[in-house]
Image 1 (cartoon, rainbow, N blue to C red):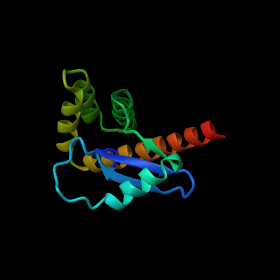
Image 2 (image 1 turned 120 degrees about the vertical axis):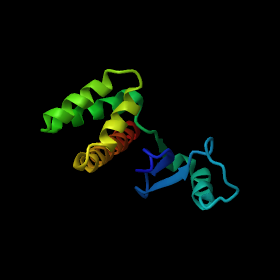
Image 3 (image 1 turned 90 degrees about the vertical axis):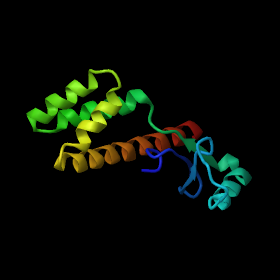
Image 4 (image 1 turned 30 degrees about the vertical axis):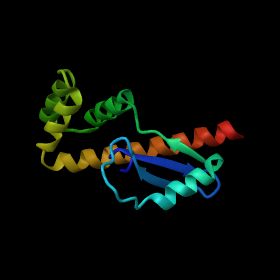
Amino acid sequence: DSLDSGMCCYYNLKTKEISEIPNFDNWMSDEEPWQEDIDKIEENWEDYFKIEPMGHNSSFQVMVDFIDSIDNETLKEKLVKSLNKPKPFRNFKWEIDNSGEFRQKWFDFKKSNYISWVNLKVEEENEFLS
């Protein structure tokens, strides 16, 4: 959820904890409730690696996979059309937001895919370091 909402996530290779801090390029607050996490990461930089959000290609593929997973042919057709128009992410979101019960199914599907993607990134980093 944090990656999907624009947060920066750092995985601690020793403790296996994830620290989440705002992407300060987009942050507009004088408060710094994440300062403790920022300090911890900066002081032990070698123990962390940054988990980047999914790129556009991966995010697009998750939408395609979701379409393949649903059994409502009418919605499938609308979603396929939304991806084939200009601004596919915005069009897909609009269709999903207006799809009733499928809206929550989309959120669950996307979250599950993001969890798998983060697990894969952690595995890749561990393999790289071994």
